Image 1 (tube, rainbow, N blue to C red):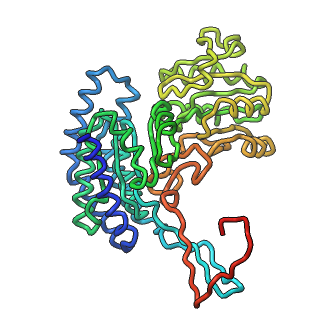
Image 2 (image 1 turned 90 degrees about the horizontal axis):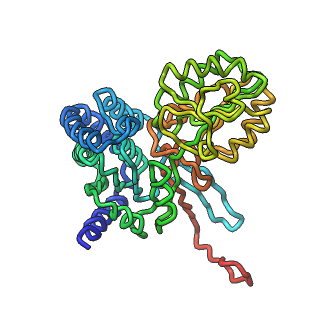
Image 3 (image 1 turned 30 degrees about the vertical axis):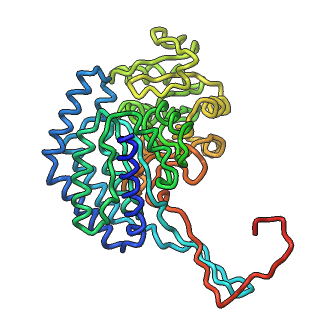
Length: 426
């Protein structure tokens, strides 16, 4: 009960701050973001000490290398976090924009403007950089934030949140707008996801298990993010040298992230020429390949892929490979197994590329580029709160506008509505 009361008190403080934050001037929010960036770099040594302690405990617990990579901070990553805050400050203010205006025949003037969601709840695993990204994007968009990071990153997250909140409050952000649940008890997540009336939305970032648990149990609206079973299809009209570079980048550059490729589909007309060299390139980087029987007829030493491999988000140096008869078969495979994240085709056939982009059901569909670009920073959003894989409210990398809603402002001159028979709520 004490834990529940503590979490509720933090949520109430965030809610109270959100009302003041919603009307805070743009320059105050931007100045705060710059102060927060400076504070991150000034306190980098202290943050890195806390992160080193988290890393030591995680390694002792036997966490796999890809997880440790997500957890690890260094001077470069802290600089990137700070730069993300500065870039966010430089972006246009999403609040107050009017995207609809009309004067009705009765004289009413109706305008629609962007407003904050209110209080955003973030639940995430590892990746302490998410703490800074979430705080920065929420404050820029006028939202208070309640954070619950993974237990393995508790020291890192606490140090980052404390650094940023001190700088933000000193710069004029309402006290209470930044809240971190500094507790390891997993029951805290269940409490948080039932704070109806205090939290306006919950955004989970992490593995498929975490996201599924939140989506299925939360009474607060959820924006589903993160899980990425991403594919690259190498078409018969592909530039194979380009394909080697794209596949290697999408799988190897950072295999633990959600925009990394997990499955490679290859047109059978180019498979015999493409796969041996592609396999050599990937194996040089330590990638384990799992292939269908047709792949194994070309690469006999590849492990046989099981059915579950096609739907697996490995988050590691493992790649499932399948040979397909044509682009239609590739599209069918992708739409059956993907998670709505990011998909790519390598081809010089413009009609096939267009058909692929139109028919593949995903938030982001690439032609001749790596799936690794699905990222708020790369899309020019400064940073991202997550990558939505659902279709309602937002889809794809979520920047500032994704953290806003709308409000109608109506101006009258004494108009009243005459009673009329109607079956509607109006």
